[in-house]
Length: 496
Image (cartoon, rainbow, N blue to C red):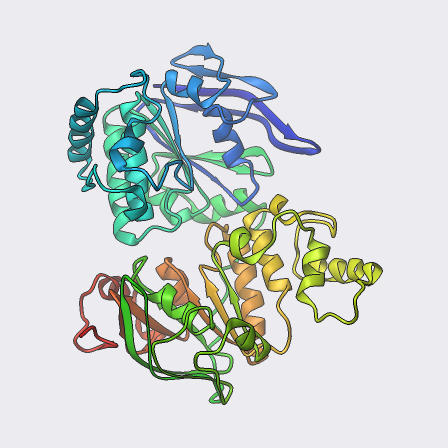
């Protein structure tokens, strides 16, 4: 199906999110939509998929103007959108999620739906048990379920909003294979991303947005630097490695073990120096998240000893860890790190030591202005945190950290952020390292692990590698270890 967008405008108050966008996408094309955080990519796609009503402009499908007032309208026109967080119901079975939205009445033909599900899954090489529950799926498998559901509902235009965020390298490979097959079948694929390597490796053509405007279009072979300039309006450097030179230990683990109902991480011994960066790599659910939370005091260890700056904190609470200079920044920024409904000024007040019963709001407002300026947060002291972009929420979390800070533990610190925001976040983290803070972080981005780590720990089904020098690793070697290959020489913490 050919898609044409003519003079699309959409505003939210004073913010003009889409400004007169014109774009034509022929059938059978994988169209990249590239741009920084807040460029208007998701807004444009939500206009096309009926989640947002346009203020002005026209949408044409196969040359005919259409009116799309809701997602139901969009799917009737053959347009489906797979959001960054899949719209499914985890407590339900996969086949029941698959059937949702189908116009088969109150009692759909489950047997026919099951056959269609299996036929579609086989076509794309997806291995999903339709009788399993959605909460047992990985992020990549939930994406696969949503692709099958949209196709079953009749989608001929499929929109993917940041689909490679939070999935493994093997899941990304399977996703790209599926998208290429969809294009070969004559379907139109819109691939929304801020990741240049994904767009350049997959898309037949690219449109670049910046501050709500279409700043350029490109065909292969792509000029990476030109795309970056179109995204940000300037040349953006990638930063340079800044290796740690300190020998003073910040964190020491001796025969450390932790477990939950799914897996066990055992026998890890590690010494992390002040100013050092340790990257934790592995497929989702391999134990790195459990490990990180246990050394933050959020999960009680089952064995061994943990020492922070010479003080034994084994089995102590997160509040004790925090008082002794450790801070944990979760991947779920709004759910675990920030408080929806509170302003930036209120967050900075909560993060500071309290003196007395009353808040000095004049001082708090001044403090908020200083932090907003120092961390380049695009907001005001009165801005509520849920109104901020992901990058600005992450900057807010960094701005809330207290001094002195001995150990900083981060889950996916740059997930969902564009290149410029990623570089900015790591600039701030490296500033902390130069002041003696040790950083341990999880990332599903192998290039991020290799670029910013001094040493790397690889996790696989609860097993943990010996610390590996990042300078001597390649993405291929790291990928093999994550997939379970090459472990006899590097494995510790083995399962019994």
